[in-house]
Length: 84
Image (cartoon, rainbow, N blue to C red):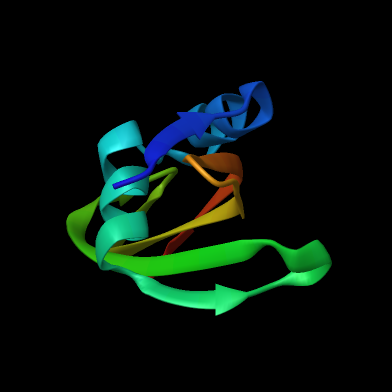
């Protein structure tokens, strides 16, 4: 199993968008995998949320890390979080 590391940008985006390191890691291991720009790989996973983000209530939080895969590690480049 490859080690997962987080870029500084990804750490900042996780805080800003409300995604935890555990959610990002789980998204990589359990989520749908697909190719995005520049040979990067994205993962998408939906979590039961049932809570507030901002001033609205949401049932689902979708976490989508964008990664660069190396031989021995997965580097998380950025992280998106969507609320439904």
